[in-house]
Length: 76
Image 1 (cartoon, helix red, strand yellow):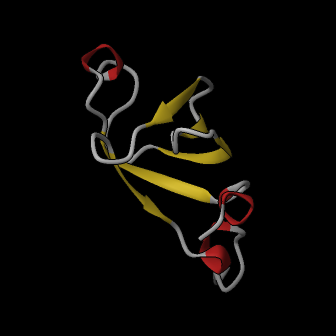
Image 2 (cartoon, one colour):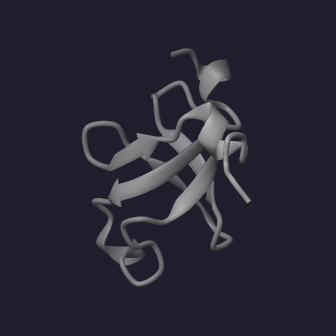
Image 3 (spheres, helix red, strand yellow):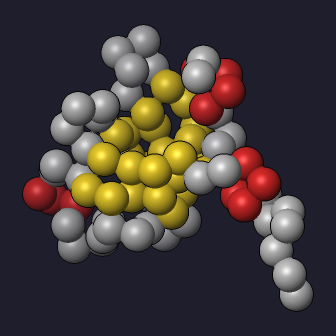
């Protein structure tokens, strides 16, 4: 998947290696990808407010399916 295809996609955090985030960024939190920088760091705006980059190989997250992330296909 290219950088442009990731921008705007929703993610769910599985694990963040940065111990300073553990008080506000727990597993299960969701956010929106703002950009992927030249080093491959995935910058996310978390629904709780702050932004934080996820480092491939150190942090773990799930990319949500586009239909689910946009609210399509949800009953109501």
